[in-house]
Length: 175
Ligand code: PNS
Image 1 (tube, helix red, strand yellow):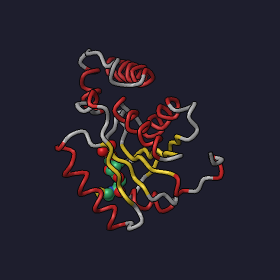
Image 2 (cartoon, helix red, strand yellow):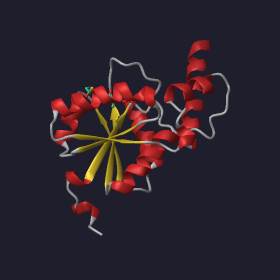
Image 3 (cartoon, helix red, strand yellow):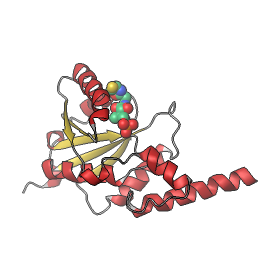
Image 4 (cartoon, helix red, strand yellow):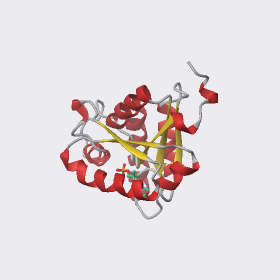
């Protein structure tokens, strides 16, 4: 086994996304990716033009907490093009999860655009466990906001942070 500190960017795959918030479906893909690559770099999109429930700093902090005991799984925020982020980090593989055929068209376009922008970058698609194929961050937020249980769908810290977030929001609405 190589010393992880001595690994180059070539031993890493980047797993990009919005993660607003991270779900068990994302975690499933990250752990599958970590079986194939010595290191996985989770790249959290920071896009001031896209309204998110959690700020990018919050999303990064949540994911770091989830993987705090797995030093081969790193987390960083990124902005701009993924193709450039990968180049700067010397990473040649992008992992994306595919849940259903409906994901395919967008993912296919994105993979080809990234290939155009950075010919050294390959996109690998991975399927999550079948029990997460219906899961998305937006559905998690909707179910939580309407009082449904999300216990089986997200890491415990995400449920905790959603509770805090909605408590903050209802406090600011009532004041
Ligand atoms: O979790 P998401 O929202 O499906 O992730 C989408 C993401 C972050 C992977 C994608 O929007 C992205 O890579 N954005 C960075 C901008 C970019 O590189 N755009 C051109 C590629 S099509």
